[in-house]
Image (cartoon, rainbow, N blue to C red):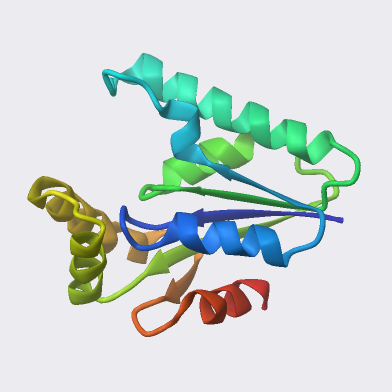
Length: 159
């Protein structure tokens, strides 16, 4: 059985760091960051680009699902609304696939601290804090990373 890990969380919480390490820890795995499917300059957000990025993401994920030898597919992105998660899952070929829906959350002070270390601007910090609240309502497993290091977070994901 293949495993697809859809890992969401606000900007700056540590999704990429955790997923990079999870990719190294799991056997026969691949890691895709949703931002890689939408890295354009200028960055344009409209219905056409939203549709494009969802197509890019699900195309890549389905290719990984259909590739023999790949057992663990790790995907991270700012998935702060249930309809984003639902649209991704609806477009995936899920036969024989176990999907793990995970949201990384933390205390507001910790998120601010992490974002300041990453030298994020005030507007991005405010937006990330607004998104943080939205994760509480998602149909996902919540992992509070406020006091967890990367390995302890990965251990919780694996369980």
